Image 1 (cartoon, rainbow, N blue to C red):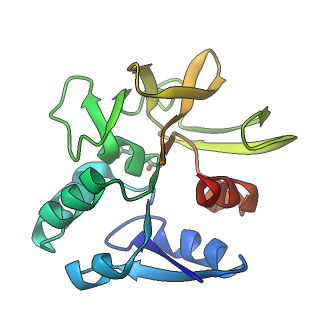
Image 2 (image 1 turned 90 degrees about the horizontal axis):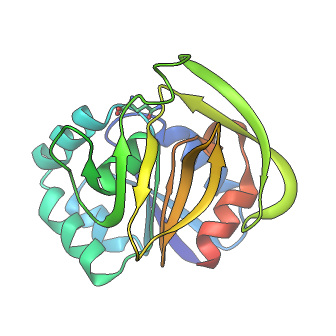
Length: 187
Ligand code: GLN
């Protein structure tokens, strides 16, 4: 069994935990404290509000331990706000954890339309079309040489991977798309 943590300070962590519950061989763990983080073998950073999450991370004493675990190579997947937390660059703002070689622009998909669902396949994850839910989503403005584009939606990068780090502008936790979790855990 693998202990997979979900950062549980703000946002869609309950939905992520519910998806993990449905997977074989996974022990889901809400992460609220440094002790929780120490037990997690991989971490999901949920959607929500990145500035609030960043503040709560510091208040919980998780900032330094989390940066340390990411530097050591802990697998991590950020959905939407979580992707903003992982990005090395946030256009026009200070970055947060800065673990991934990507630049994100907040609310970039959202300024066109608050939320929408796209349907498309993501080759790395599987051949089927899947529903991709965007809620005031960032897009990934560019990826650096260490990162790779996984999919584009409306011409913009919506998912990227760097080794065992994953960033998605959309929310597989809201559609219960377990293939995405299996993909993350396979990295
Ligand atoms: N707009 C949010 C932010 O900038 C992200 C939205 C989301 O996670 N659904 O943090």
